[in-house]
Image 1 (cartoon, one colour):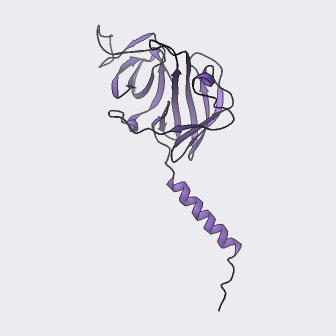
Image 2 (cartoon, helix red, strand yellow):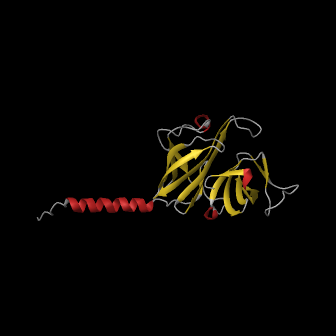
Image 3 (cartoon, helix red, strand yellow):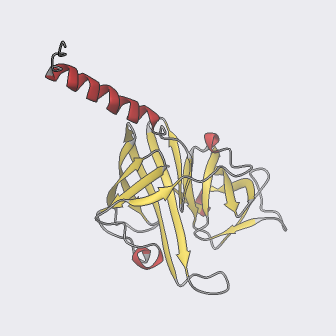
Length: 210
């Protein structure tokens, strides 16, 4: 019986590299969408996002909330990010990684309220499973993510005066930015299965990548 020669180290290394490449190819490429309580917009090698989750409370007011904006530059499926709450100077750094199941976020420090609302994001990756796109979401058109800062922000069918009646958003509602005009942004808001769009003045929200 002839024995086959043992494979060389170079051949083993090549086979391992091809296997790893195949695993990487099987992973989802970074793309816009909802990942649990984190909504992300991927555009031109950059990622922006908004995390919003509450727990407990009554009458629609949570006892604890975890809310922040996110921005970073992508290097493959990974991004070094900065996170912050609108109006606050403090920035908390972290790492965002896209995976085959969704995304993982790790921060060097928790935002206020987050440990009680979601659990800590420090020390180990916080898992964010990707959600099935909802009707009307059309995440491929998302340019950026933002948070409403006005106490009440009326959605308009076109830029201009607010209508007397119609849909409106409230402070800390997360939105996806679909379009921009001078002084205005067109946004999409999702609540349950419904999705509404409209124009808001730029003064009524904070965006992750202005």
